Amino acid sequence: MAGEKGLSINISKRIGELLVSSGLITAQQLNEALELQRIGGGKLGQVLIHKGFIKEYGLLDFLSKQFGIEFVDLAAKELDGEVVKIIPENIARRYNLIAVDKSDNRLKVAMEDPLNIVVLDDLKMMTGYDVKAVFGTETGIMAALDKHYGEKSSKQALDDILKLTAGGTTDLALVKDEDLKNAGEDLISLEQKGEAAPIIQMVNLIISSAIRAHASDIHIEPSYKDTKVRFRIDGVLHLQPSPPKKFHNAIVSRIKIMANLDISERRVPQDGRAKLKIDGHEIDLRISILPCGPGEKIVMRILDSSGLKLKLEDLGFEPENLAIFTKCIKAPHGIILITGPTGSGKSTTLYSALATMNDPDVNIVTIEDPIEYQLEGINQVGVNADVGLTFASGLRSFLRQDPDIIMVGEIRDFETMSTAINAAMTGHLVFSTLHTNDAPGAITRIGMMGVEPFLTSSTLLMIVAQRLVRSICKNCKETYEVKPELMLGLGVSKTLIENNAKNGKLMLSRGKGCDACAQTGYKGRMGIHEILEVNDVLRGLIIEKAHVSKLKEAARRNGMLTLRESAVRKLFTGATTVEEVIRVTASDVD
Image (cartoon, rainbow, N blue to C red):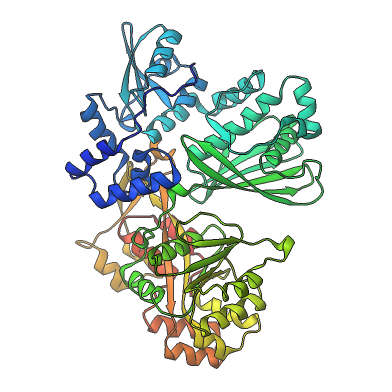
């Protein structure tokens, strides 16, 4: 196959303006998408979809009419497996296309980019058919490929890579790479056998597959018998086709090279970063390597700025919660804390708050470990413990930089907390995160650090506890009836049940499972929030060192929604399921 992309449906500003004139997006949304594209690269259409300005189906339906090219809804079409396999899997997956129909000497192929003439010509030469290209959605094509080629064939694709002797089968490039001569014993021995390039391609395949599946993390785990690869998608780990155990050390060495880590050190944990370019835009990887009994385990966190939501309205806040949050972040001074476990969306909420207040007349500085996303107009500093740059020392330095707003990535100790309080008392607005299970628990956690209660009560403005629940797939969403009394076990009041029942029937939603959601019934995630606004009553309880149960009781009297109550609201609006409510908020039960 030719390596060039050829003509592309890289939606231009002119097409964007046609979308505006057709009423599918607003001029403001187009301008915001164009700015995000300028900063992060990628295709304008992908930015519009990721931001939620237009649905994937709506965009392709529009493009179909504009270019006079048929659009095929793969989720609703049953494909012939024999027709699908006319095109080899490695080619189909590389260009994200699939054969959907055959008649006489014509092969109909669904593609994201039907104007890619180079690929069409190559397909014609490869298959011997006249190829007719039609539009298909990215997710629909990927799901259909997974369904018809399946795990066994995906494993075969890995085996095919191992047999290659030259590079170039994946559209993923390392922005800054090291010379292979520094690859270490594992890769040197493979290089001598002519297998170094296939190992690189194997790693590229794992990473690019995870990115296209919208995974947040990649786990590569050794055991005594094999190597497992798992992707965390929408907060849940999914097992993937895995490479042979004998290549585990070579894979680890390759990833260490990508992250500029010491390939000869296998006894201690190592952390690093890598920057990749795929499909025209850059992706950051945070890489953690941990020595285990059978070998080194790797976890790679995928940071894709194109999917970053910076509008508060997109984060899933309930209306009253959004009002409190918006009011508190506009305060002139004080401390605002975001709490929750790793992967609960704390960083996204912080970045969204900073983006909301980011104006030329405001000086915003942050210290992070590490800097996850670069925000234009904000001064961001990365922690470097090797040279003594910690959260506490960085925060002290910030106070000499004339800041208006300060963001500290995480408060872990008394020194950082004390410095943050001093900053708040001297007229600065401070944002940070804590690891606690709920909002009232953060007050107890601060007390355990040794902070005097009167200091906490005089500076704390708001605590936000949050989690992420999976959203029901819109493509296969269905409603079903449940007995109202069963909802009492979720802590739902009879009044709320009655208010959401119609004609005595309580209807909820779920996903049946389809190709678009890989048969899970879920697609994407949304936030649920518990917002504790510190008022005079709570300040008095803080000074009295009241038990966390009393703090929670007072906060609820003040109107605080618990995490469970926020999740139940999402349940009744048909956004998530009972199973998700129980899974994510199991600890939030009185």
